[in-house]
Image (cartoon, rainbow, N blue to C red):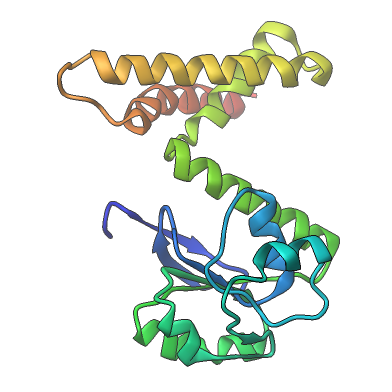
Length: 211
């Protein structure tokens, strides 16, 4: 897998290889389009929908339409040369996967069946946005809350703000160390975080097994 690609599992349980930082996104339904713009993203193609919120319709009216949600125009999608197409986990979007994948265009299918689905997808978009900016720094979420809990206890009134501050400080420390330890060679900060996080994970696992 190329360094600029990531593999994710969509709501249809498909493994989708997509760009780590997609720049040309076509969205096939208004709900996912609204989520994309809510996290600061932008699209190059939009669905033809009369149910779109007015503020969003105004924002994307200049974008080319790729057809109605139940009947996307495959030729139009391909002509826009997107690096990612976001659709819904329904049969009519499953049907467009083969021709788009043949054109080397990844398709990510998301479910919008409930309020929980909306929150889950919004969280996914937020995580993707953070990853596209900061890289894969998963061990921050492992180290920070556990370390802070040892210092301030489990009261979320203190745990949450201190976790934010400690997490930011940890990233700054890791980034500085990654740039200077082997200067002029720069270590990927994600590698350094894994180096710090793996022993901490084993420490937590050992404590859990003893408990």
